[in-house]
Length: 342
Image 1: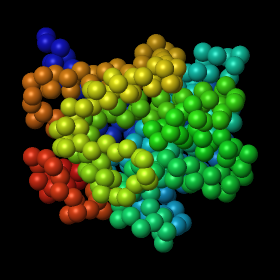
Image 2 (image 1 turned 90 degrees about the vertical axis):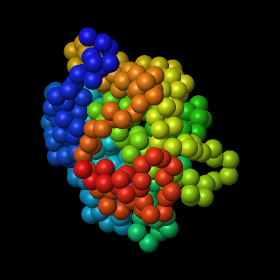
Image 3 (image 1 turned 90 degrees about the horizontal axis):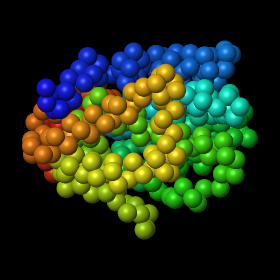
């Protein structure tokens, strides 16, 4: 059997709206919350605190337009499922670390803070009512991390966690590229580790998504196009792919030249803690590697026609301003839009 066929059959039964184990429905905040609370309980032998379930409910309200002062999520790629998937990965990484380091645990408070940081790490894409002038959250692509930090600052204040504000507003920068991680002032080794875990969870969750390649082509590329229509702070570099196909072709280089360095060097190989959680296997890296192996084979063949999975519907497809974008692709914008609603 050829490698290509093996890759195509890998996790063939995995459902598109489920996590890497095909057990947790990651487009459901209730299912994701239950899974994370179970991880907390099994890790600390203590009932999960109420703030965890409250945070998941607030997250759902924010992304569905029921959070005071905010519109619903209208981005395509950075949607509710991505953040829930990342949050579940974060819980698993923290649990794996705790199992491997019983004498140097992060502790329950850091676990809770890590989950809140994961849930709202992309809150900066959500537009504020009466304050934001952008027509879509994707236009905040290059400033969303700082906006997420501002949201988290207010959120922690509201829930009497003000003593963690200074830390969380720095930890969220582990999920972005807008500043050097060396410029962050985090003195505590465990706090720094929490940031590394957060950044790791963000990368491995999205790149192990069963529909990662489809989402890059049909969702991330339109976000980049719209982002580059917005004014940016001076000195901020932009990523401007000429087409969705170019974005796919450059994904391998992005992984090898940026992501892998982050995972192994900047984040100190924290992805390996998933092995401890899963008792020997790292489902995230297995799925990530297979996505990239499959993409590599398609690039060699110069044929992307087999990238045809149907990701779960994202609410952003109802609001994304396709009519303002001249999508530089072989696909017509109307075809693009219809793919998102399947």
